[in-house]
Length: 131
Image 1 (tube, rainbow, N blue to C red):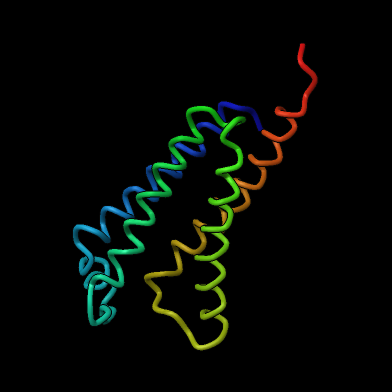
Image 2: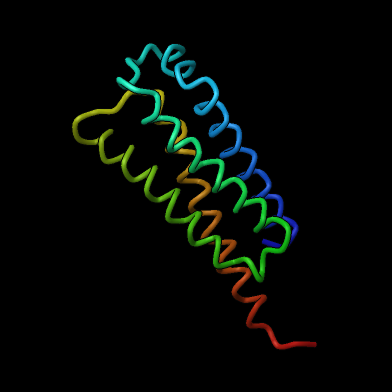
């Protein structure tokens, strides 16, 4: 891992969460229709998490601009990705979950691992002796 990879990862994460956030904010019924899943009784249940994704996208962009001093933000990303993938995989293994949520859970699991690797790497950089 190097700093260029960390920056690129967080740009990709910002775009990924930003696009999903915009999709579910602006056209919340589209994904439900595409996957033939019954939507919730009110789209506010979808639009609020969509706005949270947009907030996280802004945070990930901030990390991408200067990863070492902003590494603390990475742990919030770890929490987000753990929460989403954990919930989806839990329900996948127990009562079931609509298939539309599963690919994003796998993507978030990959982001989770890469965020932890980035956090570890930037920690080593932050603690390295000054030259």
